[in-house]
Image 1 (cartoon, one colour):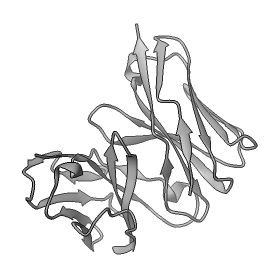
Image 2: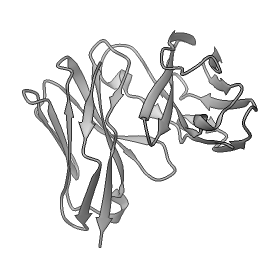
Image 3: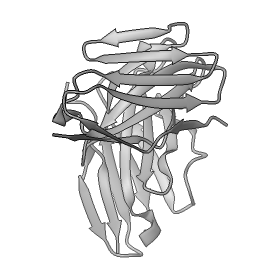
Length: 117
Length: 111
């Protein structure tokens, strides 16, 4: 399996621009997570989808952030308008979900490094 | 909420053993994980332990769990330069989907 695939790997944009980050989870996984990693806050969970439905978006920092999962194999995280403080590494992770240890292991993508100038 | 704490830095000589420590506060934590993050990469699951276990060994990795003290450790035997990375401890409750991560321990292996 190719693992969790994220694109782009790096994104540099100017303040005020719209940014869209993409994620393809591992085939057959029904849970998807978006995280943000910064030096100050470490890893923060932004949003969690189960079976394509957003279950917990309490970590989304502001209305400028939105996430969608139109189907089981694709998710996007959008920031509009972007601000310099959004600069971070954004990770997508997926898991099989369900009860039991093995099914809930989260597998991470390589991340998107976002720089907002 | 859950708090997971780790020391921030560890320097170890190549060939020695590394021990990375982690403490957590949630007594309902059922699953505990160690992830490794190399520069520019995502988090890679190294190993995990269920809360009814005291120890788990997997090749060079040994996980010890002291549930009474809520203390988890990861021992890397015969540390190699390729082990230089950030190591994250994470915990999850049995009916929870959320992982609570520590801040990560940066391990530097010196020759």
